[in-house]
Length: 44
Image (cartoon, rainbow, N blue to C red):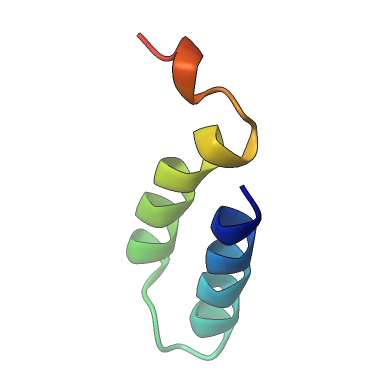
């Protein structure tokens, strides 16, 4: 989970620096959110 949080923070920094598109950030955020929220086993 710590890795997922670090990866998302890094992506946010890249987004703010205009080195990542908001679409790329949103996609990554959607992928990492279940890991961060510890709900990966509850997904259908």
